Amino acid sequence: MVQRVRRASVSVAGECIGAIEQGLCVLVGVEVGDSEAEALEMAEKIVGLRIFEDDDGKMNRSLIDVQGELLLISQFTLLGDARKGRRPGFSNAMPKGPAEELFERCRSACRTFVQKVERGRFGADMLVEIANDGPVTILLDTRRLF
Image 1 (spheres, helix red, strand yellow):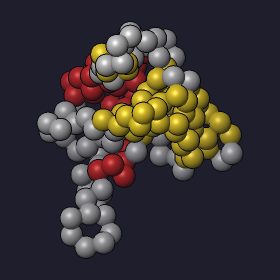
Image 2 (tube, rainbow, N blue to C red):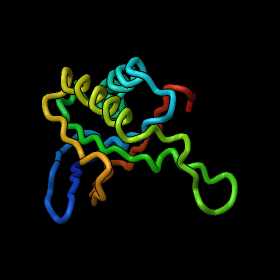
Image 3 (cartoon, rainbow, N blue to C red):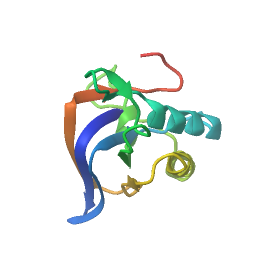
């Protein structure tokens, strides 16, 4: 889930571990079956997504174009399946070890395009503060068209 932000930060146990100004805050869920190719595809999509306004007020500029900053937050709950019952199931979420490897691969690929890439702490209880600009929120998935 990609959110255009004026600022965003992430804290763990009261300590700010990442903060950005204008850019994107991306909540990342890694699904069973995801691969390195999909992590790289997602990185290119994130940094190239044209959701920043140009001089005519149209969403026509990317994170690269506006030299924005990026905050990546791992969030397995994005994969929660609540279609049956009232308690979501998380069997589609990739286990922590391989999920963290793919998350880091995506982060590394983003860093080749964006100067400042911050992150949360994988598997930690985090407080994420997001000042959504617009608001603009876009759902991305390498397997589905939205």
